[in-house]
Length: 257
Length: 312
Image 1 (cartoon, each protein chain N blue to C red):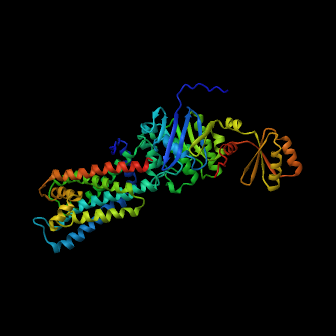
Image 2 (cartoon, helix red, strand yellow; image 1 turned 120 degrees about the horizontal axis):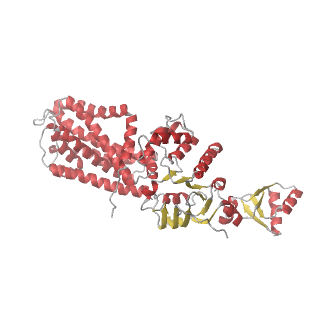
């Protein structure tokens, strides 16, 4: 029986600590948020898009922009919850210092997940700004995508934190990238519609959280209609809660021993 | 028999029968402790004796496998978070935040206690002065010397004005000057009524600073009292160390005669313990042997209680 996380408001101190570090490196951080996804958008959207043509009423570059907003949240949140959180846990003793103060593991894990979700949201917002400037966003409904992006970032971060709980070194994260993240990215509907896959593969990969995040976020950005929003939300929230509960239990066992 | 002063306040730390096992090994094996208000308490023992595990238990970071523990009136580990709001911790390994400057470290650590805003600035200035780090507020941690880092770690532990400060080998790896600076700060803290608990494997440090200490070996408390009481209770007041082979041979002969002389062989040393050194010293002088005559200390107590030296 796993004891449920019982975090306190002190989680915010963890979030704020990370924000304070991020602010010190504001310029490179922001460049990073804009840089790579923007390149993908331009290169694939215009280069590749010319070959592909339009997808129904949607131009390929608009389709891609809404997908890259999702994948950027996925990768930014996962990176933060793996490499950066691991550094703070294992190398910099940041978490140990927090545990000497009145924080508990539950606060730290929630604070780190919230922070990684925040970074995911920031990277998605950077692309959303660019996409809006390029006229790729349908209407004001796009603002509704932001809380969904934040929620998805939380979920991706919570799942990555489970991996961090097991990690002994940075190389360990490659398993997660190779076995989970990359297949999820390629089958998640980010770069092309999932309908291109055989049905069995569509079904198989629909148990993962990314396609559900894409199904929620893309229509909000491109003016399409949501098909099964409650199922999508339930899957995203379910992964998020399961991730947070397991990560907290595992990291408790790792640090409180 | 000495009568203990009745204390108005309950002890700050009460431990009964604390145990901790890793695999088959009991690293803490039935430890009883009582630390009183305003006391400087030491846990003295070699590396691997279980000192750090005991400290982690006090903080609620290592759940005990047996026994009872109360710190600042809170049951541990159940209410460790509440206890830690009033505890300051100086860990053995540097946990300063390398992403921040000196001042940012203090501000950030204070935020973990929920301390922020206008009231914090004067407190931070006070702590910087206490650490002799004025003018280095904006220095990154990587640019500090070992002594400076330790001083910053010490004042960081005071940010919440703790009633109890817990220090895990606070001067290990420091040069003598830096060590004296830390010692001075710790004495000042004690003088202002703060209760301190320190682990150390430096006999001299324990003897200088601690009002009372527990001698720990292999997870057990072997003796617990003031340094002076421990020495008086266990060891003859005079120690003669014989430093070379002819001296050792002569010492063995003298000890074999009995007459209130106890001999102990420790590595290449022969130690003679006695209450009346006069005649012994006379004979050693007459034969021209090299020796060192010194008062008994905690190292001798440790040696007698455990059969091995403190520093391994």
